[in-house]
Image (cartoon, rainbow, N blue to C red; front, side, top):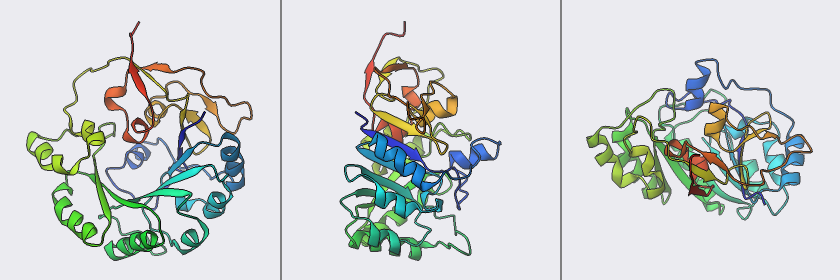
Length: 284
């Protein structure tokens, strides 16, 4: 049974945050945005595979043509999670989709980004759209990346969002990114009150070669799917080109029968770590 999919709709985004691993990769000619496949083709894929949770991310999902129509056509058994920078108008989305189907919206707050002339962004637009969605019944959580150059503004931003009744969450800057950074002891102490227990790995000091073996349910009940349909156990194995599983547009695509071994749990990205089950195993 396919419990969850993280669907990377596109590597394209109208924001260019320096702390985004996709932006960093594209500076090196990697993970370049590709033309969108038709929404109707994706709809056929998801209604065939029918994951219990379709966790939609990018890039920016609302750049996809006919994106709202795709969501509206999903099998009712599929629950949707959505991550967006909210830089696109949301009235059609809110009037078309039900909070019973879209069970969570992660609103990515990027305070250094002003958007474009067509899709501008500022705190008023962002907070207004969060409140609009929340008052329509959607479960909204604002998320911020603790990039070192803006992390000390977290208390002020937290107060702003909480004063409006919005949930606020902080992710440590990703240790798998192309610009490595390890927080100092003082920075970890500062961030500790803002980081939830399932994100504390991002605050830890990375050892030179910590590679315990685990078996992982990725590929058995969870997938990470790229914009062209290529499927992997997780986004890290996509980046490392390990254990490709095939392409979901292939009508003969199948999940793994049993978990595979993994030596990368020490840097497992949060978006997959939340959805897989791991067990210690022998490296032999």
